[in-house]
Image (tube, rainbow, N blue to C red; front, side, top):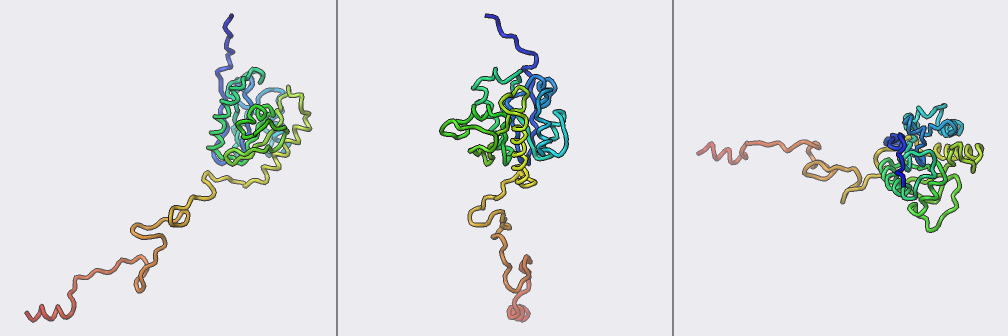
Length: 245
């Protein structure tokens, strides 16, 4: 049997557009050949992804695949489930989806977005078990009945020109639904948890000064924070006895 020749693009990998504070992470299935060669997400000439982002209102200005690094400016992150590029998703193996999920879950745990949007129904159908479903769900665009590390799961249609299952208007409506959900989120997401865990015996974030509890009160008659005044003077009766001797 002849050994399969490795395509020249197969070793190429895309860089995630992720940073702390993103409110949404968009997840592609895997890079196409054009994306792998250009080094940008959704770079295929027939892919409608970037037009849908703008027309739906997810981004405020028209952008192209060359602007993928700008997405975090608007609180949006970008990554792929499977890193290996291919001409289509038909060559991807089920194990690649599962291995990709292990990596993606760590990214969700690290960046803590409010929403994770799969750009492609296929991904959710391949991962329903690890997403916590007891049985295979009916997957339609929109929010799903799953939450991972505090992030609600959302599904968008694959905007590839090869996707014959959705018309453009249906794709646009799904992207607009995501845009509406994003507008309900806080403008800025802190890198830190909203509530700090309280230390034992005291309120959250309270620090006690050395040698005493937090907010300790100074004794009456002395200004708070002043140390007792030291003196080497003897008591009056002892001073008289010392002078007489």
